[in-house]
Length: 208
Image 1 (cartoon, rainbow, N blue to C red):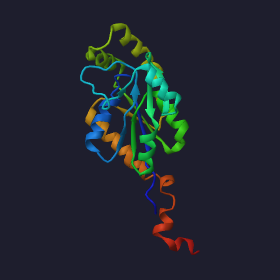
Image 2: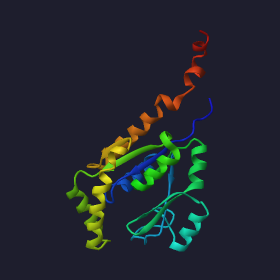
Image 3: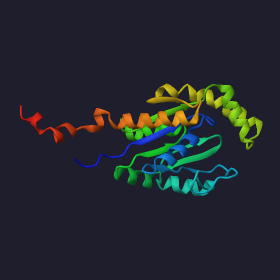
C-alpha cells in the first residue's frame, strides 16, 4: 500500500492559552513532523527569530504574497495579518508527513474548509479566565488595553471550541502535550484513514 498522505493538524487556542508552548514541546518530541511556520505582520517580540516563531513581513510584502496565492489561508487578528504558506505544507503532506499548524480559530476554519475531514483540529483551553489573564500580563509585552482586548476575544474564541474535533485543557504543559500526542496517534488509527489495509493484509476477504 502506498504511504498514506500526512494529516494537517491544527492547534488553536485563545491568545495566552498555550498553543505555541505545546507546538514547541511537540517539535522537540517529534522531529518527524513538519511544523508550519506562519507569516505575520505583527512586530517581533523579544527573543523571537525570523523563520522560527514566524516569518515576519511588512504589510506590503504580506499583501503581495497574498495576492500571488502563496498563502493557504490568511486572517487579520488584533490588527495584524497572519497567513499559512501553501507550498511547504502541501509538499510535506504529499510526502506522508503530518503537518502541525499553530493558528487561531479563523485559521482553523480555513484549514477545515480546504481539507475537510482530512484535517485534525485540536482546541487548547486554559484552566480558567483568571489563569489566562495572568499569562497575558506576565508577558509584559503588551499594553493593558490590548490585554483587555485579548480577554474579550478569548470568550468569543472559547465559544468556538466545540466546533473542533478535540479539546485539551492546558493546566499542565507536559500532560497537555501527552494528550495531544494521544489524539494524533488515535487519529492515525481511524478506520476512514486506513481504507484498503484490510484488502492488503487479508486478500482472502475478497474471495467470498
